[in-house]
Image (cartoon, rainbow, N blue to C red; front, side, top):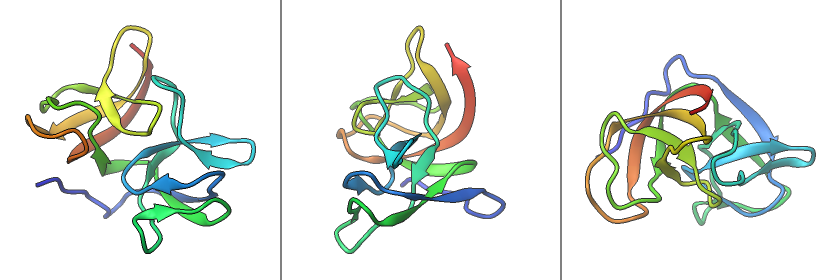
Length: 127
């Protein structure tokens, strides 16, 4: 079971530029929050949601920028210690060469794509 540490974390409020799902990485664009390009820098993880676990375009959303966050997995196998990047749908993927590393999996295992992992947010730049 994934966990998060919201005590002592930082978050920002952003306007959603499109429909966004909870526990996915978002980037800060000129008009607000949107999913990043695969392997690109992010602002943080969307932690707020509407009644359907998503935030509609034009709504304000809370984005966690520090601490341990819950993030949806893009791969069926992600293990503790794996470096993390965002895919084009805002899900956590294993970092590759040239990707913008966002953090590290601290609670992960084999399982279905779409499961929720615990990720220590530590933006460190390209790998």
